[in-house]
Image 1 (cartoon, rainbow, N blue to C red):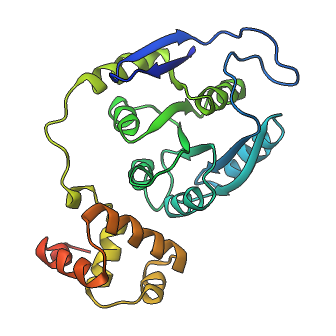
Image 2 (cartoon, rainbow, N blue to C red; image 1 turned 135 degrees about the vertical axis):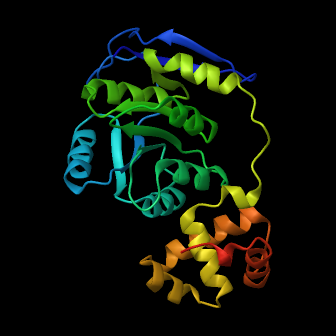
Amino acid sequence: MAPLTSALSSSSALSVEQSTPSGPVPGLIECHCRPDYPVRIVAVEQHDIFREGLRQMLANQPGFIVIADAGSGDDAVDVATRLTPDVLLLDVAVRNGPALDVLQKLAFGQFTTRTILLSDVAQSETIVDAVRLGARGLVLKDSQPAHLYKCIRCVAAGQYWFSRDHIPAVIDGLRRPNARPPLPVETLTPREIDVIVAVADGATNRAIAEQLGLSDQTVKNHLSHIYDKVGVSSRLELAIYALHHKLTERPR
């Protein structure tokens, strides 16, 4: 799979160029992208063994610093929000919230972090949806490590990175107009709905954390994102919103 870098212009068109090195970089794999070093990375992978291997592999690469890792979608949002890394490596199949949910939550904040998806397979619709939500690249897990290193450098430098096979789908998907912007209630993730229902039931943050198996801080982060999404500023307003949209009547 020949990797490509690409950049989105102000008109959202996708331009592509072959990823060819312009000259050697001492101690680094040759790459024409020049990010600001060191690149601060958060690695999110659902399997402990692979996550540890990924962390060690990146830590041994000059110019990279792995500042944290996570194994779930909730933890990914929490860590990315607190640490604002340069690059977030995000497993598409991460547990407790798929990658698109993580991207959706981060999209509502003022984050400069650039996200790269890690996946066993690449589905065109997922790639397009991820790009719309801010993803900057995709690396298949069976790729050579050198591809991942180059992808990180190019994305950290402001580029987009996709394989040649995925470029047509990304272009077509971005050119296709959306039928309408989603309503706020339609953007809520299953986990966010769980939190809203608990709030409507009168639960405290501590009770919600125990009920859903989350940390207190993660519950606070969820509520902050939810408030921004649906346009409320208090628990009472959120409870009224839940009742109005019949969120408490949905099967749990």
